[in-house]
Amino acid sequence: MKNKTIKINLFIIAFIIIISILGGILGVLFTRAYVFNDIYSGAFSSELNLNDYNRSNLVIRDAKKVVVNQDVQVKENADQIRGSMLTIFRKKTNNLDSNLKSSETELEKEIPELTNFYQLNNPIGIALIVSADGWAIINKSILEKNVNFDENFVAISSDRDVYEIDKQINIEKNSLVLIHLQEASNLRPISIMPSQDLISGQSLLVLNSQKQIITNFLSLKQNDNLIKSSDSFDSSIKIYPETQTAMSLPWLFNFKGQAVAVLEEDTWIPLSMSEFAIENALMESEQEEIKVPSLGVNYINLSQVAQVDANKQSGALIYPNEDDIAVVKDSSADKAGLQEGDIILAVNSLNLDKNLNLSEALLQFKSGETVDLTVSRNDSLEIIKVEL
Image (cartoon, rainbow, N blue to C red; front, side, top):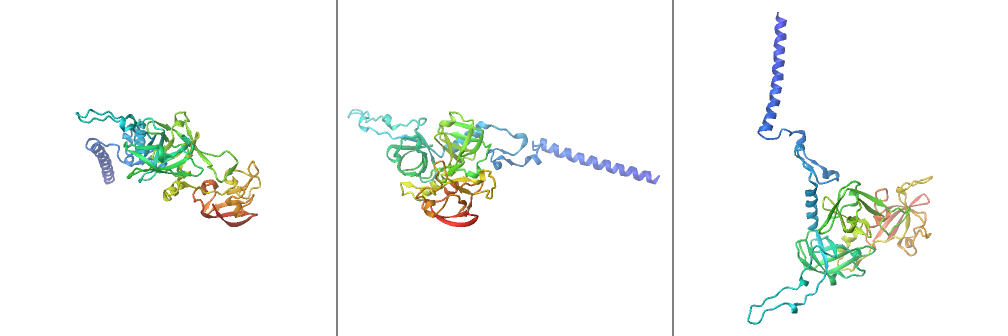
């Protein structure tokens, strides 16, 4: 009889505990649903920031409230980017003598000439602001050769301020030109996307002052030639869909508001390839042209090929091109004693591998700068100094 009583008491205690737990759960759900209107908080309430994965600027804070409105997202990014854009127009000359005036007995009345007006939706070019004190970059390939921006053009900001252009700096072997806006200050410079952030599959934005297009994919396309030049761009960007409208707009951006590439002769060239030259121009703004570093070799990128009996898996193998030239005569490489068959493994502390080729490494130095090349020659390592 005693054992039966104990069993009944244990059953009652367990039943009470279960009812209490269920009551607590129901109480919490009731409170969230009718007091806080948030029945789904908890594990789903933490933020998921897709921007951390280089995919978009979408931030998910509450799974039940996620609304994806791509049009709004694109407009916000485009408006932000356009704040760092300038529209470029050929300068108009005013004929003030032709203003209409009233008779001497009436109040003087003047009507501005049509040459005082610039139609904002019809610029001849688009520039990107790169410094707050008035420096911007523009692709000169859209205009006639040897154009002087400081004499023949004006720049208009997104706030419709009209600026005279008082200086330009050319970059050697580059279609980009730096222009300076007279008396400009507190402008909004654009940032340039680092090359290592280029990831296939990113959503990008092609736009100018008026039009905009979303591109769905991105891939970094390498120069198809097996033998490459140390003194030319090796990478370009492929976008999809590659529509005619997209190819008529000059700049490519990501959804962080960074400039990704510039269009040169139907090819998207990463702006990161010119970033160091732009920085040099800003630091040496008294010069009219910034020279780019030159080594003067043709090479095979060993990180991108498979070879029989390979004993080196990375580096730049100096190799003759179709004209049978491995080292350009009188070039920096020739003067330093580089030879056909040498393998350049590093430039200063920059190792040449699948993520960094010789052409890209050289762009991170100034013309005239002396660098140390780590070279493998006849299975022995040498350090060769070269003035670029």
